[in-house]
Image: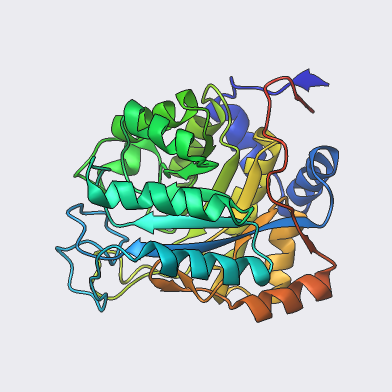
Length: 329
């Protein structure tokens, strides 16, 4: 067994991605068994603590101020309300609470002070806390770390080559810089992307190549299927075929064996058997609750029924952090 690799070539990843589907699933399932407890799935819950009015132009996002969507803008939620939602999510089975704000970047102001309060308060509930707040400076990442932040989500979204067709208000390097700041602060990294945005297979492989060649693999890799929202530039995109999601999950599992691979947006449109294929292929995390920021998501009770049928069990909070001394097949 070799050490976990950070030198995957695009050609190697392409070969894995294009493996006949059943063979790919079996290979990914074998890797998953070696590095993770079979049937253990992390349940995260996501709250939009500040919604809408974002100055960016992400083509998939209904929270961009420039698009005409049904999103109602609201400012920062009170700390007490967020903590109450966290308690309810924990009671329903969630071990991680993710806080999302529709910002381009974090600013050192009272709103950020309030986020720090939220992080500290939710930590007291013995839950992992994750934030997704846009771009971060090194000092801001350090401040979040000192408050006890467990993870920071900052998706690459797509490949570097396809990126400017989706977003023009920040660069790919901006995203990589934020991930670097998060790593340096010793906060675990949550970073993945979205498929179904008009990208090619090469773009999907390119995104996985970037993620798998980071100095540390993201401890969590969300795989999202685009949920087209009326009023956004991608409103007419067709649904992502389930086999594409399975290929993304399985390939991520093989090249980043210690990472938690999250079956994220788009799950509402997937049947139980389609989700089961993704779990078999190495997915071991989901978002639960009726909303993913602003898009619909299966409810907790529905997910608990799925867990019962498939024999899955929730992962506990604060599992050991991934270390670079682990080995990969």
